[in-house]
Image (cartoon, rainbow, N blue to C red):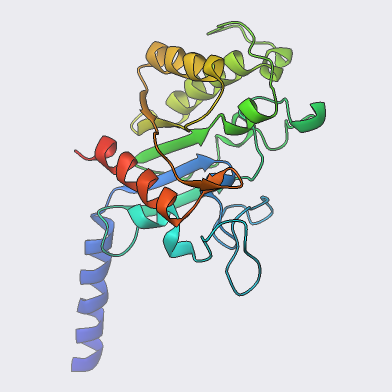
Length: 227
């Protein structure tokens, strides 16, 4: 009986301590993936466990990812939903002019659980895939608008604020993107009052963060979201 009471108190203590950490959910692309750690598990991933596949970077353990560093047992945050999809664009415009509606950030933004903080890490594939920039448009969107970057990003941020009104929202902007993508992201974040986290000096291999790059991302994001 005493052992059962002790175990119950221990579990309650652990649950209380765990519940005290703010919950982070992620809406991202390949930079935020790792096999077995994205929701839903049908999302494509770019990073894999070293025992199964690797070699494109030296990141071969989930503990080395930027988001895992922020949500480890020792870190001040806990992970909610990581809805990241390798190769995904914010817009519907994908590589080879393919329709990426099914994986776009606009389509996935309503599947992030109940977080305290949302970190959106996107626009990399829009830049790489040559998505049309489009015009700044903040209302009265038509479906066709989302095949261009600016209206799609605006709709995403507006939608996230509507869906998660009490959540702190940040947009992480990768380094080495096209100037028009950077300018657009800054302007649209400013319009919605969303804090932008522009990354710099990220070590990469095959266009993706190495262990060193992941640590740098974690450090730069942590500085911005700490309160």
